[in-house]
Length: 175
Ligand code: IMP
Image (cartoon, rainbow, N blue to C red; front, side, top):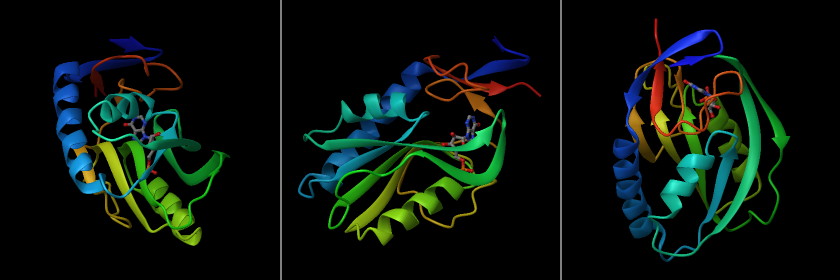
């Protein structure tokens, strides 16, 4: 699979991704069914994970979106830019942040700090992918779909330079 100037190889199939969403949805249902949580989806990348995950959550919930950016092409810039900020009432709410992928964890740390400042009752993170080799563990990720090696991935909501988000499977950059 070629996207712009780079070659990618199939890494995780749609079927595996769907099965894992079902399992995570079951866990989140059990943990949050009596808490009226607010799901906070981090755009752009999390839209596909969010839409698969919430179909397996057995209660109705409020969903909000924020837009952050920390990546330029295929490299982390280290700084988080808030493009669409946090709106709505956070104080006293149990917040479940929905992330596509956690790499260094800079985005999670930034966001959890902001939410705690706004007096959230609790802040937990659900991420479809986590790269343990580079994760700095400054804030725990409670729900992880798959731990993956430290290689750039694309598809299932994730992009390379804006492209590839619509791919149903996950692809890994060929070295
Ligand atoms: P972190 O702040 O270093 O944890 O980076 C998290 C953000 O970087 C994610 O929400 C993605 O937008 C982006 N990102 C990290 N790794 C990848 C990747 O392998 N492919 C595409 N985007 C990535």
